[in-house]
Image (tube, protein in one colour):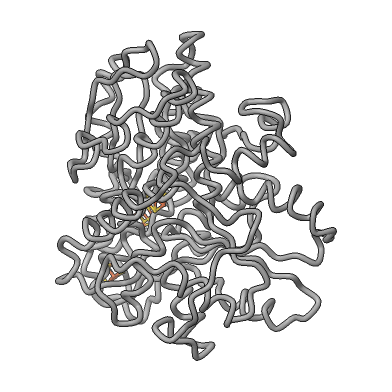
Length: 434
Ligand code: SF4
Ligand code: SF4
Ligand code: SF4
């Protein structure tokens, strides 16, 4: 079948695949890509399709012709290999959407049963990406304070959304210096798994496979971009398939706790999954690092918790008066671009309402999608409300790893292991092969 209206996807796209026989060439994916994601370009001018791997087209295909590139079968193979130690780490937004795959209401918060189901499936260690999120917050808050002191490369942009980072690298290469160099939560966790964890467990990397579950197809791209990345990234929808193929019903799984070392996250780490969550968490931590006190404003930061695509606030962090924003979607970023110098710190996430609306989340029929992301976000904010520890730098596991391994936030060792750099990808716009 000739596809005329469908979005162009290359065979070697690392995250997304089209099952051509199912496609009815309705053009919905192209409309979503152009209008929701904001990727507009002349197909005849570029050698490669320009895709930031976000998976929003998957969620909006009416006939299921678009799917993530499945990697969960590889995970099943490793689980059956007795010579391999297999770790799995769970991202925050997965725990309020996995239940939908097992007949539960959207937003149902499942953590302990999820850990139990993964133990049942044969994973040797189950870790919490929320710990990695706390580490990202501490390093990113430290970086923000440094930039405010030196007045360099402001506004600071968050960099934990790989779709946004790739968009910036392609379309706004001149702003690359504004990206926070702090690795994303899974980037940090994988660096620590490949160094600290191997060392204390006396394991050899060749015998260990590190898997991460994310609500995000773009993470399949992110794990390949740096050294010490996770070995395999699977989406929430792939995890549901893995559990079902292993005859595991999460409703019947025992409740278990995450494994020690990377087991505890603060409320800040959990709200990462919602638009505005990274901003709120980083400001909580920056203010705490500067004042030594918990500031109530940042414990329930209402101005940043709405479902608006552009959320702004003026805040006092330590003695700094800052203008901050949380942006959802690339078109919203383009809207604020002319007044970029007004801001000090900007969170940018690609997907509607943040990672709760990610392209790797549980598939829900289009007619039933209305309001579902907000329910998932509410589940995360509720968990933050119930958390005893709300500031990342107060997480005892975080304090311990700085004390025993990394020295202090922003130390030379932390900069080496927990920070990264980005690429100029603007060439993709210039290559003409037709
Ligand atoms: S939305 Fe699905 S069916 Fe429609 S053109 Fe795209 S891939 Fe084909
Ligand atoms: S994954 Fe995102 S950027 Fe790529 S084609 Fe789909 S909607 Fe567009
Ligand atoms: S917003 Fe979250 S789910 Fe969506 S592309 Fe970015 S990191 Fe992935």
